[in-house]
Amino acid sequence: MKYISRHMENRVLELSRSYSAILLTGPRQAGKTTMLRELAEKENIGRRYVTLDDLNERDMAKNDPALFLQLHKPPVLIDEVQYAPELFIYIKIHIDEHHNPGDFWMTGSQIFRLMRGVQESLAGRVALLHMSPMSQREIIGAPCVPFTTDLERLLAERDQISPVTTPELFERLWRGSMPGLVSGAMPDRNVFYSSYLSTYMERDVRELSGNVDALKFNRFIIATAARCSQLLNYNALAEDADIDIQTSKAWINILETLGIIFLLHPYSNNVLKRTIKTPKVYFYDTGLVCYLTRWSSPEVAESGAMSGALLENFTVSEIMKSYQNAGLEPYLYFYRDRDAKEIDVILEGDGKLCPLEIKKNATPDKRLTRVFHVIDKAPLQLGNGAVLCMADKFSAFDSKSFIVPIWMI
Image 1: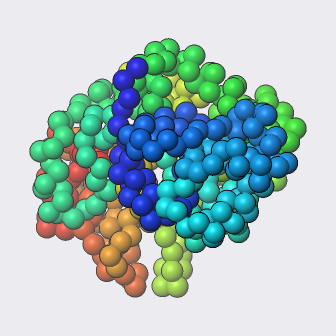
Image 2: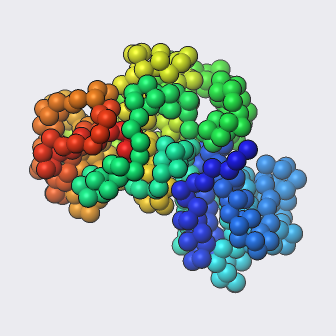
C-alpha cells in the first residue's frame, strides 16, 4: 500500500541533526513506526530497527540494557520503548559519552509527559514529539500550517484547499483518520476499530493499570465518547460504567496517557475570577467516537443528536494536530463562566487571545461574536476572532471577526 507522507517528517529530520535522541509518542496505529522506517530508508545510513513488542528483545532491554545497546548499536530505531524504561539511563550514558546527533529514534504508545522515567533520565537530551492520527491536511496533501486567525495567513490559505460540503466533511469525520483506514490497507472500518479496541487498547490498559474489568472499561470509553466536547464529569462516567469515582479518574488518565483523548482546560487568570475550572474532553479521532457511539453512517451522524458535538470535536482536534504536526506546543483553551457565557476555543499566541466559535451552519450570525468581549479584561490583548463553520468560502463580519470554513483548518 502506498505510503502517505506525514507533516512531521521534516521536523524529525531537522531535530535529528541537533539532538542525539528523538522520542515520538502517540496512540498505536497512528503511523509512528511507518513514518520513521520510511525516513530511515531515505537516510540510507544503516539505521537498525528493533521493537520491544518482541518479548525476547523486551526482556533483554529490561534485564540487561547494556547488552541490548551492544547488540543494537546506534544509529537505531527502538519501537515501543515505554516497555523498558530501564533503557533510558543507559541511553543517557551513551549520549553523554558520544554526543552523536540522531543516534536514537524511539517510539512510544504513551504520551511523553505522562511516561515514567523519560523526563528524569533524558531531560535536555531528547526531542519530544507527539503524533496523532492523520490530519485532514495530511490526507488531502495540503501543506502543514498551524491554524491561526492572522488575516494574511488566512487570505493566503483560502485558495489552497478545495471547498468541502457538509456531507463530505461528515464522511471524513465518520470514516476516521487512522492511516490504515485512510490508505485503504484496512477497508472495513468496523473490523478495524473492533480490533483496535480489543487488541491494542485492552493490552495497553492492562499494562498501565494491572487487572482491569474489560466490560466495564468498554462501557467507560463508550460513555466518554458520548460526552465528547462536553465538560468532564467523573461522577457521570463512573455511574455509566458502574465503577467508583477514583477508578473513573484513573481511567481518564489512562486514555490521555495512551493518546486516545486530550483535555481542553478553561482559560482563567486573576482578573477573570468567575470562570469554571472543569476541563472538556475530546478524542483525537472522531471515527473512533462514531464507532463507539454506534453511528452507522455519515448521514446518520450528521443528522443525529451528537452532530454538533462531533463537529466541534473534529474541529478542535484538527487545530490541535496542526500544531503538533509542526512540532509546536498548542496553547488551546476554552472559556465558560458562572454566568453561562462561553467561547468554544481560545487560541493563545504572540501575546494575544484569539476567540473561536464552532457552528454547524453555513451562514453564521454576527451576534455569535458578541461573547468574544468577555475576555477583554484579560491581561493579554484580544486578537482576531473567528466563527468556524460550514461556509463555502472565507469571509468576515468585520476587520477583527472572520468566517472561516472548517475545511480550511
